Image (cartoon, rainbow, N blue to C red):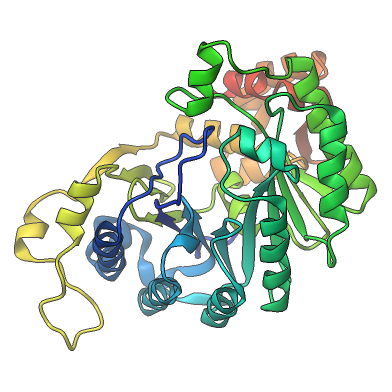
Length: 410
């Protein structure tokens, strides 16, 4: 169980070189002027956080930041000095733990050795590289802008720069993909020296408004069927587990001791604050997300500090009079919190602690979800091991079906 004083931070950099055909994230390419205005607004948002209602609710001085994650988009498309300035600003406002995990998402071809050495010196200690596939033909099909050789060069530069905690992202169930293609990608990844310490593997999901969905609706996309998709998923996990990796979450595998602390915090219900366009936050009592409108975001946070000598920006009277621009904001009921504890915690392969549920909510797990648990144990989708309730392998394949019962329960 995490202590009440632990806090996570997410930084959203929405820029990328080119939108991938499968991507429905809040990301886009744009010119230098917009990037510069956005980054100044982002830094100002961090500097003014102490004045917000969320900071008061959290009792900011009692919080210790245990992980920071820079995601996107592609954070490494911006100048490296901005990454250093953002991280330094965070340290001015928040107290960091000595072993704080600080992750940076990176796409192959967007960095060189000098860039990576700089961000390592700023304090970034974990790198997540978006490979998706080690086969150039598959990368081209999904609109990636890099080749496997560019990934290899980026990976070797990261190791040389001193990163010893590296994640590699994969996507399976790609158009025209075969099991031999899965094996070829894994062969290449496992031949890297040293091997990556963490691998995230997700099945392709077609999302509305994406390039791949457009191709699919035109009948121009040949995707693996559902059985093949599941076969590919388990083929990756089984191979990696034979190589010493451990599946600790539905889509994440790591060598012992290299599990992503930041993502585990999400699944265990740890508090987090998001900065940047569309960034989400969770304070246990409520969830809220920043506006997804770039113009509105820059308009609110874009003003420079009135006092140049001050290291912290203060909100103007005009800003304080108007509500911070949110895309959503809502309070959580006790039922909401219990549901989230269940469907987020069950993403972890070790499952959820029944004692932890009792400690958090003051009642036994079976008192709130006895019928649902009995149902899914009977269907061999859930099982127990000591104090823990967890998904079976079959349950992982039908995870959304299981989760839906806990979401609607009262």
